[in-house]
Length: 77
Image (cartoon, rainbow, N blue to C red; front, side):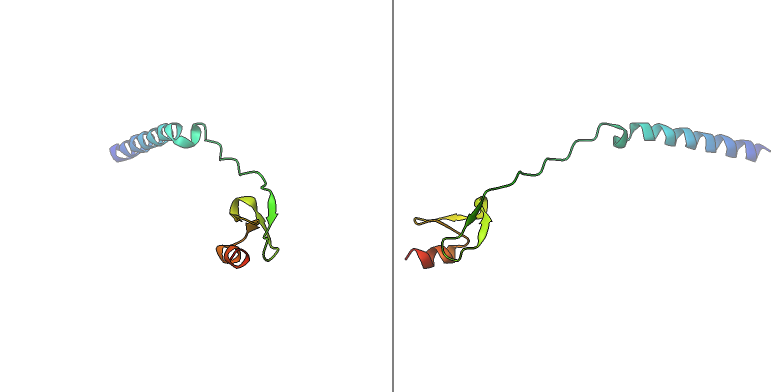
């Protein structure tokens, strides 16, 4: 009988301890909002091959914009 009483008290303590930990967990706190994805970029055309690419990825040359250094070197000797 004493063993059963001890078991019930131990289970009650574990249950209370676990329920207390859940309220302290970060999941209950305000979650940060994910960063907003970047907006659309202007698409430009490579002056050598005609491929379209985002303006941020283009390489600026004397004559125009290029998709790679190789195309810049081929178009601008």
